[in-house]
Length: 290
Image 1 (cartoon, rainbow, N blue to C red):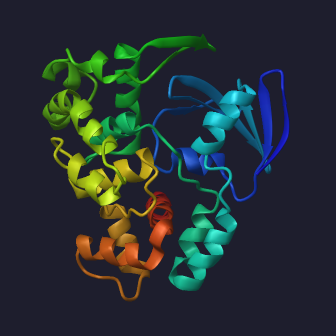
Image 2 (tube, rainbow, N blue to C red; image 1 turned 135 degrees about the vertical axis):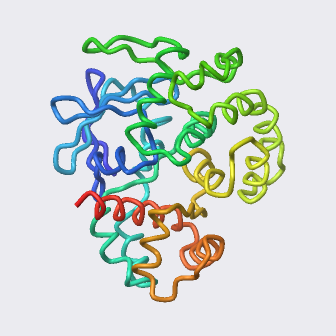
């Protein structure tokens, strides 16, 4: 990544092996909306950003030097060499050739743990358009209004205290369905759970997952997603129906059970496991759409 310019509240970054569209639509985040000009507008940690890609240039606005350095570069994971990672993965697993080609440009976003927890509780047995709609409704109804751009109100994702008084019916009204009770209870347990994770002398993703799984509705797959997308723990390999199908279709020596697939993938790919999972997920969904 190279900073080309930053002036008048807009930054231009030269980034190779990056696709804004794939990164924002591959199922790891749900608060970016496409604009008529091909750009995307999103709300991240209380900041509203419009992002547009022109060839290898990424244009971000409004930004300051501080928000660019302290938030957006890390959020989009722009300093990591994904091209080198792809080459290393192909040497380890040649069967990843098609997913790497399909998903080239995807980057793992560095998101907020609390928002990611609520988001992926909504994701259980759900699909991306419905999750996106639910998260947008939740933010619109209960999050703090940040600004209004192009006749669209942008709200921050609600904090735990802003959701404490919601009833089960309130959760169902934003599309939670059977997940309403999980969300209702998790809001009340989140602060204690996150405090325990933060108090660990040495952060251990396995211990974090065990703590996350004490939250109602959080099982192995959802806890892995929260760790991967919300806590930056890249040594994760969430297995869902899409990933399972791709693994068994492409991986000659694929284990049979989800737990064994996860364990073997972590052993094979190490810190790149979470990235491989996204490549497989994106490739599977694209094949289904085709």
